[in-house]
Image (cartoon, rainbow, N blue to C red; front, side, top):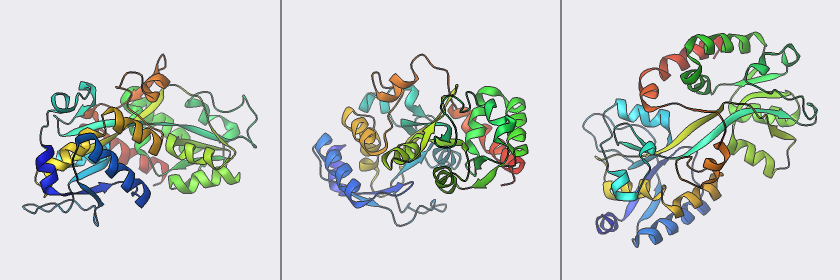
Length: 301
């Protein structure tokens, strides 16, 4: 497969959130080194899904399980032997082998440490519904987190909880907007924020910290190669690269995230002995879209 990938020469990446030039070069060098190949990594100009019968303009999606699920529903993925080819843990193989979960992000509430005294931050998800946070709480447009939480709680409990959030008269906006509001002290608590944003806030020495609640809410990051693309072998290799030892270390350096399914990884150590929620592929395909839409309506999005 490596020889075929080298012949293909390049790889068009549909990389959610973008990939700057420094990191593009870093990933390219590590990818080439891992498999002794020479493949240029390129950020795809468009992230649009291919129309029926058309060759995709990109080769592999690096994004969320939700995005990978959309590809699976559209019949755009194909089974790959991830465990045989790359030693991938069975739990990381999603959507009948069409996608590979190579890392998880952790989502928790966060609070402004200058406005919320130590020891008084929410100690549970339900703690967000306490009267003291009314009008001082941010609830972002990333309503998928509540759908994922419902995969453990059930729709009835999650619906009551989301209705309680709506009754808190929360400040609304995108995750980025509300994280900045939290740093500025315009809100005291942000109901849910991923660990990558918290890491960036810590790097800026912002007065923001995660509230330690359980269950931890995990969301998988996935690599999904399109078999009908122009560079299918390079796409499969790059997806597999992300689950290798070097790929895991590089993603940890890049995003501060790793796979809970890889023994000894930082994420695996973090969740050890703790309750956590990670929605399974069947839930993502079957129930998640409708629940996310319902919770968005409740919250006014």
